[in-house]
Length: 331
Image (cartoon, rainbow, N blue to C red; front, side, top):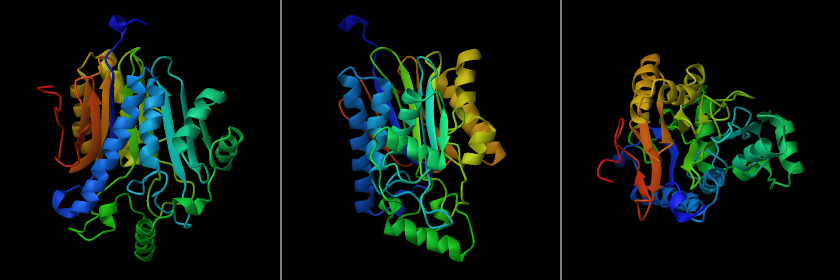
């Protein structure tokens, strides 16, 4: 492909949405989060810059966040009711609607890579539990002891949830208002578009603190937490998974874009700010359309996010600001 035929590239990532207030984060914690979001954005963008596939860019970005204890994915995942970790992830390719996902895995170090292995090396879309872990091992993916995902902070959350006999959908249900770690949903995700105009989306999570054994949210469910279609858009979601599943949020946004010809921003706002919010669901999405136009919409008080396009020399990072933002005016 010659230079004139190359399509514009872009990547958008998220690290969770919820009660994210500047006054509730220590300067050190905020600096660390921003640095990791920037690192993840740059990792994905570097893949796109050298002509790599959108799926590879999504994996590169998500891996950075899975390997960080700052997010509820990979190392730093929340504890289940049994005191272990069960992780979910999915990835989808917009060029041919191929997808792969894993759910309730306990040993694969980077669930997003296991999801990609399902896409590439199996006839299936979703593998779960011990079978998914065994499949990942057979593909040569790094395995770790389940305790590798432990962090002291997540253990403290779990112990508090157990004492209060609650299952926590959000971290601010487990922390006192105004505490340094008062924020929700640490699910991570990325969407990207490569020089060939191909879209991809991926999502990875540790789920809910003190969740019941085997509980699976929207992150590994294609059409709920993840969706990509070159004819419309790529979506990765974060929030209250049960609502995102019931309302098929990721697919609904792409369908409105494709069939109703709605601008992606309008489609996302209609679903997140109206449909989902009216039903009582909280969270947000990141998205890209087939023209490399990024969109970020959330009905919570904030969302960790990073983005970079061909017009940006460096990644742009956002943490706060409730509601939908039209980031790209002036870019």
